Structures are given as structure tokens and as C-alpha cells.
Image (cartoon, rainbow, N blue to C red; front, side, top):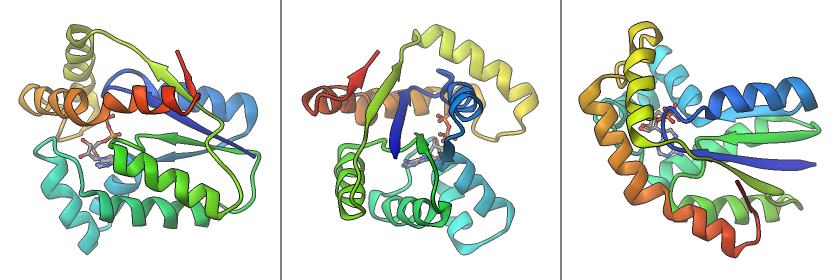
Length: 168
Ligand code: ADP
């Protein structure tokens, strides 16, 4: 079974690339952003907590996110492969994913990196905001998300490089 991590900034096209892989290879897709937005829509306690971070463009705390990811993964059942879109976003999350998959007798097969310049990301996300209905697709929150990406998430590229799993 393949486990592919799609890695890139907000607006870099992780969702679009994931959809293509789902179509081509029949993999299942975990988007942690979609999982969280589902919780918000259903008005759960978890959704309320998630919303307070998402609206500010900040990350949901690692411990909470790791539990959500494991539960989502285990609910998928048997399949050819899984695409991780939006997880991991921090080094502790990458370590937790490695441990979680090892405990289930598997591992990350590869990390696919999408690189897009910041100006283009901002333009795309502002445009997406006109139709996405996402409260976090506004210029101020977009800038906060990009800062979070550069500070907390981009170091993961080197982390996966060290694991020998980084692909451009
Ligand atoms: P984007 O890549 O456009 O930022 P996502 O749907 O992946 O969109 O994420 C939206 C928001 O959900 C993030 O800004 C963050 O607040 C939260 N989120 C999603 N995945 C994670 C994660 N792995 N860890 C922490 N927060 C997350």
C-alpha cells in the first residue's frame, strides 16, 4: 500500500493534484482541512475548537491534529493507497505520521512537493475566496497562513529529504 504526502503552501494546488491521483490510481484522499471544515459544519466541539485557529490562519495544535489524523486514517479501511493532503504541517506531525504508519506495518512512500511563488499564491487564494466560501480565504488571513507555512511547515522539505523521500 502506498502512502503519499502532498506538500506545498496554501493555494499551491494540493487538492487538485490529490484529485488527479485519486482518479488515476484509485487512491483514497485525506485532506485534514476538509475534515476540520466538516466538523465545523456539523457544529461539533472539535469543529468549534478548530474554527478558532483556522479563522486566524493558525495551525490546530499538534496533539489534537495527530489524533484526528489517526482516526481518519483508520476509518478508511483497505485501499491501494492514501494521499495525505495538508498533513503533516509540522515536524512533530511528520514524526507522529512515521510512528503511526510504522505501528500499522507501513510507511510514507514519498513526499511530492509543489512549489509556487508567494505572489501567485496570494492572487490564487484571493480569487478562490470569491467562490470558495472559506472564511480564511481573505487577504489578511492568507498572509498569516503563508507566514505559518514558511515558519512551521517548509522545514519539512528538508526533513523528508533526510528521510530520502522528497520528490519535486
Ligand atoms: P490550505 O492548504 O489552503 O491552507 P487546508 O484546507 O489544508 O488549506 O487547511 C486550512 C486550515 O486548516 C489551516 O490554515 C489550518 O488552520 C487547519 N489545518 C489543516 N490541516 C492542518 C494540520 N495538519 N495541522 C494543523 N492545522 C491544520
